[in-house]
Image 1 (cartoon, rainbow, N blue to C red):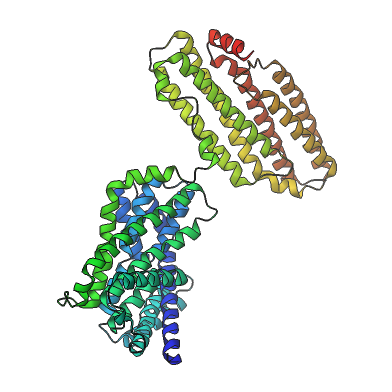
Image 2 (cartoon, one colour):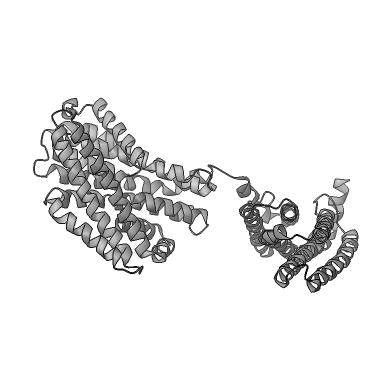
Length: 544
């Protein structure tokens, strides 16, 4: 193999990848927040989400960028799994525009004559933009030019290598097609760009280095290889991000299997110029679009089943915590059991909030993301309890049960406030880490330990009747400790030991801890009334 031609091939591939990077990055930066708003808002229905996937991917010329953006939206809770799936499938159609651009322009014009001035224009726009937003379009224009300039080098290299690379002689049998599919996967994994694989396939086809069936197989492999971007992006992510990556793999793999099956049937026909009425390069772009569209048509009716299957994958503890364990719709037919179920779910929620509070008050400090995740699970469980409570209120229930329902919501509000405050405590960790006064630090630690002891005493168990007398006494003692610590803190402020800014933040921190403990005490005081009296007595006897 001629080293000059090999260098030309590698250099051309480098230009293609650099061009795609500049084009994608420039368009994303130019659109800015509007692109993110478009994706997050235009997903109210499956059809709109699909159209958004097609349009945005065609705009930014990168299905990988849209896929990673989708992973981010789903992880942040801005988009549900059901909204993300059609968006993801649409992006596969949008990315076929690259093939059409290359097929219609890349081999019809003297590229160098047009692309070099275009690159110069893009650089000029960037240089004279003065940092303004339209300068990003200069990046995109230069990237567009570099992409097609690189394509010209690749095409020229394959034209020279066509005699030394007898790929057409491999034929169009099943083994040969499988080999080209694997080659497409490898090229895309290495370059992390299906557009680069498409450019190589089109270049090899235009120089007759590769048959049409072989180029089609190479493109099918590129569709599989592009899933590695999402798979890598999902490593260490939340469950929904992993589900999106798995959905991308499932969709692209089943589309590839269907494409190979169809291709194996018609390979000999199309290689024998059965499509002589079409330019082979146009035929490849058409095949790329059609087989992706057929993949969407195949999976669309199964999207609901796919979503349900994905929901059972990568189930995290936080998701299990967020789901009720003791209340179901069937219990609505037996209100006596339903109110016991609510009581037990509140007990679970209280134990979750207590664990969250203990973690937030830990002297080692806690990861903010984990605290927020635990808070969200708690609040989700409480929403299930509230909804079930409302449904039960519409049933034929006794007066005794009806009286417990508002109290159940009241206790739930106390528990939810514990979770909310606990998650916010982590925001003050920086000021605690920077505090140098040893005496004040010891006083703060003592106050937090006293608060944890109160929370432990107030933790509800469904097997016991919490009257709240001991908890109320502990709360009064904590109030006294709070006043003493507040006085000490203010004295340190007057003496100049700590700054007024630090003082204000620490006072907020102490007030938040006091309120957290107060909510725990309120929850324990009212929990015993969330069951009718006769059921409380029966539950107490059963536990004894």
